[in-house]
Image 1 (cartoon, one colour):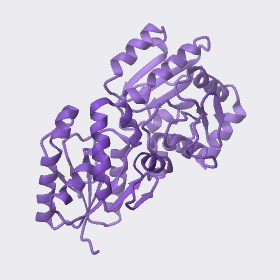
Image 2 (image 1 turned 135 degrees about the vertical axis):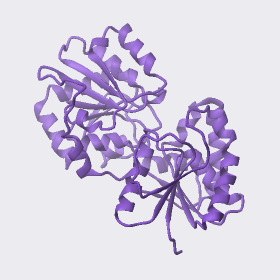
Image 3 (image 1 turned 30 degrees about the vertical axis):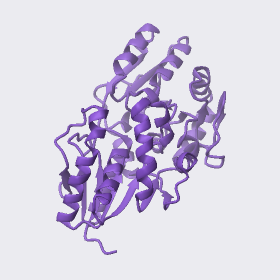
Length: 369
């Protein structure tokens, strides 16, 4: 198939892992001289694209619309996409994130003849715990995904999760996320003017949206566990619907003086590189968590929940990616894994790194390599 242009589609360029991946791909392809275009469902731009990349919006939405409204407008946006594909003579659209994937497939079912590639973000089984909207998403996945020409998953764990739920016969492959190593190494050296890293403190850090499944509350509770270790403080970078509850929790536990909410930042790497331990505390839904790899590039030791999928695949690649810890911690090859929701094990993992200089050095160097 001859293509004059590579067309990508996503919900928006909001602050998220999948959105960052698309930005990296598009900017790199454009720099290499490839003609690329991005179609967005809505206006909500956090990441920046090169000026020469064409961007098209299918609606005037801002991303703040409710889940029900977003679901009910899927057919309308699919029809608009079909018309746009016909008008622009587009032959292939690679979409990222669930809603964009539904719309990409529906456009073809509505009569477009383009090649449909869909890139999945996060595990599908997370929808089993998300009520009526979760059930609707599972139905859409079940009946629409098999109509795609190619399903791209970001980890083996995601592939296993999908096949365990649906056993699709359509073509699917695993491609891990791309990372701009040189750019991250440059950005991590930038000066910081809104936070003072002190030599007499040890800093834990976590970056991500404040959503239920991300479980930043686990990290705050672990800081409470370590209250007698006076030098430990926690930096939380991000924003989201759970922010106020997390702030309230830190006050209730009496650790608010140790917790620093820095909001969304354009360069998290300079904070990660100056911290002593990076923590990912998700209980489910991860695909291939970018920030784990980015922390490894910053030479910051990583502690992660052993959630599906991604962390084990990244930190313990020689083990069964579908295995999960039931309790305790595992000193894996490139970082420490702890059992989901186990606050005591998370606290233990943090202390393991902070109190063992040799282990800390090993993880910094091995992870970076």
